[in-house]
Image: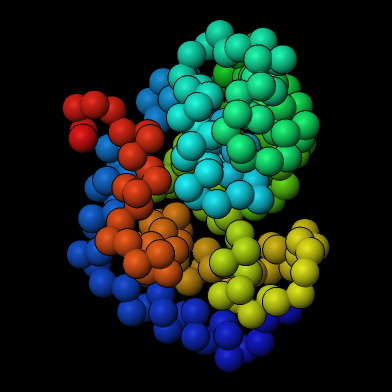
Length: 224
């Protein structure tokens, strides 16, 4: 588990983020928050494509699939598109996306958060419906669907490194939730959207001023 010094450094970093930066991120993600079932569906497909790949290849794959229509290709055509995109993990992605595709369009409401659920419970419920997604990427899907509201966090490789976790392999569910609880608590203390704070950190690593180098795929033509 992360050391006290690591936790303190993360707390200091979050405390250092200025309100103007967060306001800019919050406003942008409010513009691209999904409103329709098709937009909601597309965010999930993006999350499936993000597993063990770079953001560049993630974007290429998403644009190759164009997952904005209810009638996606057949499973065989989907597999061919994933191979064409060069995103890897072809069998897992094909099985995961196709299962999600059929399940989602059978009843899109099932994939929304209910008023009775807390965020962790919501994540666990939909994660159980998925093939190929664990805590991190299920959380990423929820961050994309509810960018200014989600109280779960995608602790990907870069976030785990931030928490000083260098050993190979995924953290146990207990380890994951301990780190996530700390991160969310720090953001909550300043009333900041966790996803925005995470993006500020990631964009700094990438030497980018904002997330548009990848999130442009969610923008409507009128927002470009």
